[in-house]
Every structure is written in C-alpha cells, then in structure tokens.
Length: 149
Image 1: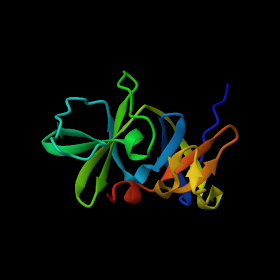
Image 2: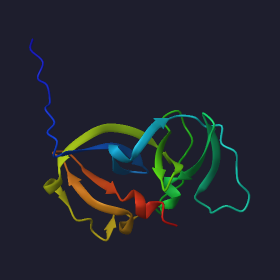
Image 3: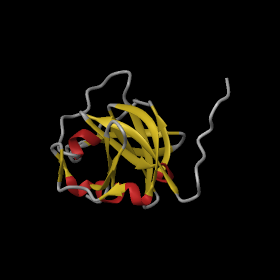
Image 4: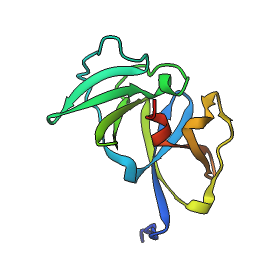
C-alpha cells in the first residue's frame, strides 16, 4: 500500500489545535515554544483570577493561565488530558492551560474567515479568525490579544 504524503507549501499556515471547554481553538505553531504536561504549579497570591500560578520549566519561570477562565468559559478541569501550551510573549514564557490537544490543521491564509463577535460563548475579541474544515470550525486565537491584559 502506498502512503500519500501531505505536501505543505511555504504559503500554508499550520495551527496546533486544542479544546477549551467545548470550543476547538488553534494557535499558529510559529507562536508555540512547546507543549507539555508539567503541573508542579505554585499559586501566586493576589494574581488575576485566570492565573493558575507559576512553574519552573528548565530554569525559566513560566506563568500559567487557565485559558478557559481567560476566554470567559468554565475553568479547566484537571485531568490527564490537560496540557500547557508554552508561548513566548514579549520575552516572557506564558503557559496556556487547555483541556486537551488535538491535531495540527493546515490552511491557506485565504481560508481563514473573520471571527464573528461571539464564538459559542467565547469572547470574540480573542480570535483573529475562524477556519472551517470539512467537519468542524476552529477558532484561531489572537495570542497577542489573549496575553494583553
């Protein structure tokens, strides 16, 4: 049986997809430092409600954000599927705690449609667009907007 390889052109965008509540979201893989399941999180007193705490990741302090709370959804329920998506924002590492990781989605820039003001109860300002696949919608996170506050 011959395998068919998916060819990716230099104009294609790749998105790591993940679930937050019932919402399927994606982040451009170029914005992601790593994805891990380290949960030795130290709580930070008097931090914002969506900040879970901090963790030491190979000598770097990483602030962990509960992406569910940040997006106005239910807080992330701790289980073995949870992951931290580590992104770099203004020379600071930030971890986005998500329910679970899904597949990598590949799309052309013109396939991404503008985000509606409200995506399934999620605050639309945190999204730069929506990618329609054959079976689902993926809300593409605007990582700069999510981490702005």
